Structures are given as C-alpha cells and as structure tokens.
Image 1: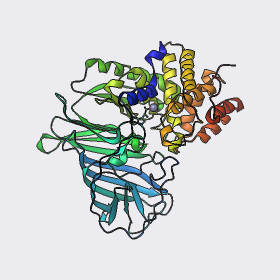
Image 2: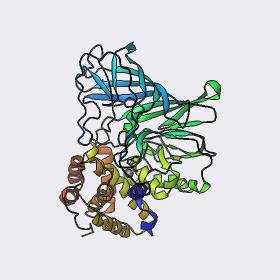
Image 3: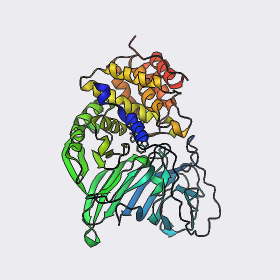
Image 4: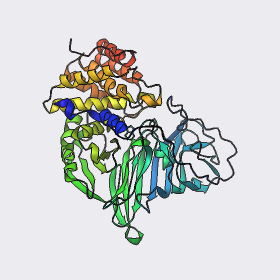
Length: 488
Ligand code: TRP
Ligand code: ZN
C-alpha cells in the first residue's frame, strides 16, 4: 500500500512535532559581545522577504564562501574559524551588513585591511563600512574571524533550534555536530547573506580531532593531517546553493563509496557517497541502497542531476530530514525510501532552483512531495490511490492559497500536499510526455534566477496552454480546496 509506506516528509514533520510536544521555546540568552566603535553610517537595507523582513542585505550578491572551520570539541557548541566572502553588488553599498548570530567576531578585513565593525547579537547583524562603497561590477573579499559558542535560533514551528547542531556524547557514541539550517539557521554559525535568493558556491575546510571524519556539501578535495592526530577535510561545492542547504557534519563516520552514476548534465558521472555514523543499527542502511534507482527515476522526470555528487549523511537525533545540497541530512528515524525520495527531489527544487521569497516555499515542498508519487508509480504502485490519499488529507486540514503569509504556514499541509495536488492538477490536463517536458523545462527555465509562483504560472501558460494555466491558478489562488484533479 503506497500510503502506509509513504506518508511523506510532512507526515514525519507532524509526527515529530506531536512526539516531542512542539511548543514555543526561547533560546539561551546570548552573552554580551564587546564591540569596537560602531561604523559611522549604517544604511544597509534588508532584502525585504515577506516572512522574514530582516534577513539579508538588498543589493548584496555573495559569490563564494571560503570557510576554514575548527571543531575542537565535537558535540559542543564551540566553533572557531574564518569565513572569506567574495562579494559583488547590484547597487552601490556604502555599508555592509551580514546575518550573524554566531560566535564572537575577532576581526573583519576588507580586501585584507582591518575595518571597524559592529556585532549586534540582538539584531543578528555584523555591520561594517568598507573604505569605499562596494559598487556594481566591483568585487571585494571580506574576511571574518570568529571563535566561541554558536548562536541560537529556535525553529519557527518545530521544537528544535535550527543551525549548528551539537549532539553530546552518549554511551558508546561520541559527540557530533551537523548543520540543520532551514530556513535561516546558517547565520547561527557563519556570517552570511542568509536568504535563498542569494545562492553561492562554497569551499569548506573542517579540522576535526583524531578519530573524526568531516563531511560537507560538494566534492571532497583533500584530507590531510592536522596537529595532534587531527584531520583537515576540504570540500568544494562548485554549483551555487542557498545558505540553508549547506551541509557540514562531524562524527565518527564510515564513508560508503558507491560507483558513480551517469545522471549528470550530458550524462556526466555523479559521485556517490554516503556517511553512516559508527554504531547505528545495520538496517538503517537499507533505504540508502535505493539511492541510485531514485536518482535514475527522478532525473528522468526532472532532467540531469544538478550537482556533481550525491548521497546522505545519517544523524542520530530524532529530527526531520533536510535536503542539504549533495548530501541529504537523514536521521536514523527517517531512514525510509520515501523520505529519501523527497529529499533527493529537493536537490532540484530548493537546492538548484532557489526561492525568491520564503512565502514561495511550496515551490520546494510541493515538487518534493510530488516526487513521492512519481517514485510510487515507477515502483508499479497505483498513483490514483496516492492522489486520493493526499486529497483526503488536504480536505481534513485547513487550507489556504499556496503563497504563505505567515511563518507558521511555511511547512504546513498546504505547502506539501496542496502544493503536490496543484502539480497534479496541471498533469491531468496533458499527457505524461508533455508533463515530463514541462517539469524538465521548468528546471532549465528558472535555473539562473530565484523562483516565484508568478514565474511558474507564466511558464505553465506558455508551455502547456490556457487549461493547464487555469488549473494551476485555481490551485494556487483559491481560498477553498479545489475539486480532486482528474483526467477529463
Ligand atoms: N525542508 C524539509 C523537508 O521537507 C523540512 C524542514 C523545514 C526542516 N524546516 C526544517 C527539516 C528544519 C529540518 C529542520 O524535507
Ligand atoms: Zn521537503
């Protein structure tokens, strides 16, 4: 039975919230940080996200983050390191303002020269003035050195803090750390332009003590000895990704390499590796044996896999899975094929295509949920049953138009299930070959700009015509739940 086997990620999220008694939590108070004299002018404007109006800086375009991180005591919230940001601008910027709730800043350099800065823990901003405004077409390098305890950012509706996770040692298990940052947790440990409309490339160097392995988004470039028996691992994420999709893991891992598979652009090989913490139950690994088949099925529907590597890093806390780029973060308790299908689909929708605004998050969750149906059908299951199950669920829950208006709506049943049903409403207006061309075309169409529902509507009209467009519009905009989509 498709439904009992495949409740989907939103199911896992809800079950998780129930089990743990989701309730508002407040973070630990931040210790005051001594500040240097404030910069003279602060005129930085945030990006203007409708859900998170304070995030990011308008006109700032971070091209690359070069990270040198030291995890001296895995399992704790201590982190030190250096982030070098390569910046450009789309409008003149006399002041720079990065999102940062993280450890204490020790130094900020602008193209190698020390500049005064202000670290405001309350506002979560690191602000400074460059010697000259950053102008469009110019490039600059900002170096931020920091050390101390990471910041705290409670999740909008789950009983967890997003960002840098510390998993204390327990019994046989050593202390571990990993990132779990959607929507805006990366700023708890890195100075970033923390918004999906500004994706960037990353080079991530992580130095860990003896016996530990580090893993991160992208391809591993090197592993070299560090002092006291430690190791430094370097990863290069060569394709831009949103900040929340950056994976970093520190644990005692066994890395399982599998043969590369030719699902990349032009049939390019995608490197396959999975990381299993030492000591987890062996059955946990079963789901991951399907990764290659999942990549095959999804790349048939969505087009070439957008990154040069893919796999999962398994974590031990009971939390929801997250689609971290090239390396999905998969809890032992969510190690099912269905959740893996969902997170793998997000590699296209969320990680490659990025959101223009958090209110548009159904464009991630609806497509990732829809992939669960495409997978079920590839396994010979009855797709209509899956759709009926979704519809029954959507009918039992409060509904709303697809574009979210509040933080609480971001990861609700509407984003996942009504979002998936909206895509199904488009599909039933055409044949499967046309629907496949449509999905593959969407990935290409919006590859170089952040996505909006308006873009998808316009694309649907051009590509599939009035009927498909009207169906999507109804599903996107109607206050009530439209009728069950069915072939005419
Ligand atoms: N995007 C995740 C998924 O559907 C769900 C999610 C939202 C999440 N916020 C999170 C997971 C925070 C972990 C932590 O797969
Ligand atoms: Zn999802």
